[in-house]
Image (cartoon, rainbow, N blue to C red):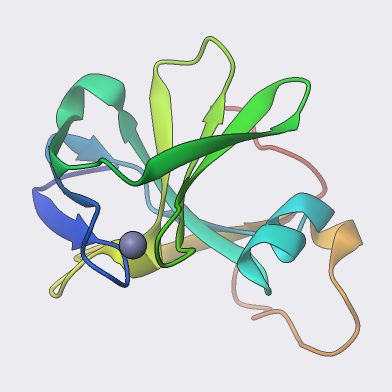
Length: 134
Ligand SMILES: [Zn+2]
């Protein structure tokens, strides 16, 4: 966890926001849903919902990707920005949306059983078969 402030936007710039407060270091998620929505594994940080300030979000739409979660994307450029569990006060944010300097590091790989064969994991990082406990 790091106390920082970051700016972020999607590819076309129609969604712009700022984050503050505690940011979880980045988890690379290899679950099938992340693979299908990002085109590769996901890289998410997480912050409290209250710590996100949107400047622009007209094109932000939500897709219910499973019983317990939805994913936020830009309906203009197709960027996949957010993951949110139902009822959670946390927003997971795709790390690639942030502008430099991001000041976070990759902490672990999760849902590693679902990883496809074409790439390798960084073995210096811990691996988890599922969502890690806090
Ligand atoms: Zn966009």
